[in-house]
Length: 403
Image (tube, rainbow, N blue to C red):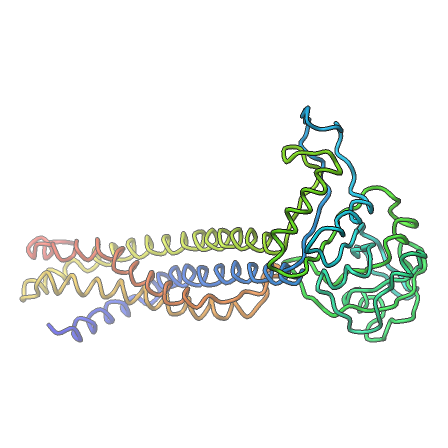
């Protein structure tokens, strides 16, 4: 019997019970579609995080205040308790070689109001003008506040694009007044859009002079962080070491009980990329379980099919069909079911990537398509193998006596 005839017999067997074949195909469709879509979600989330970190600038370094090692009893330190990050620390870091600028910063979540509308949960940062180039911020309207305005604690603010849109719509907010926690500030500039990072937005922000924010909102306690801009990306590692040395001396700390962390965009990007890769693999593995379930479904359906067609198998063998022909027919049936489900699953996955899922825009991984199709074919051959082998090994006399 030719391969074409075997394929024809296989199709005839599948169309004999259309509902059963459709439900079996559906199981593979869900599995393949899930693999493609979830891997795309993981990849989209990874790219979103990478874009957000890259927007910080490759030469940017952030010094964060921490609580130090809990319960530290180091005898090498002069202070038992962690110290605050201060403006004086920032000034000391400015003297390090390779440093282009230093921007001390405090932050708070505040509600902004312009009388007609309000925006809650705005990320307010108090800092110096050098903060903007360090964070790779650009203006879409107006100007940054100046060092003079920092020195005199002026009530001025630069809004992120989302905050500006929420408060003023399409109108230009520059020169207008906005209440920050009930205190009137004059808008001097609007930042260009930076985009979202996963579920959060980098544009629902406001930046004001450090002295103003400390005097009127946060108080003069610890800085939340110090943003350091290296003169070039190649000097980042050197500058990180200098920062650590300077702050260790100023705070009388050791690496074991340091009350600060030094993070660069490059190190954050490396960590985020590794984490996102693990997350994507995990999502793909979870989706692959549904493919396994679909494979088990193929085995069950094909076993039922072989049992129902036992007399047919006996007749075909009695008139000369070889075990190889019977094996090929049932393997073809299982593979056709699996491949049909795989093709429809690819289509469903491609459609799914056109929509945002939990705030993430899926980004298709091209390799996932041939991989999913290959796995669906392998599932057809593997899980259809046992029923097909059972049919091929039936003795004609036993098959003909089957009721």
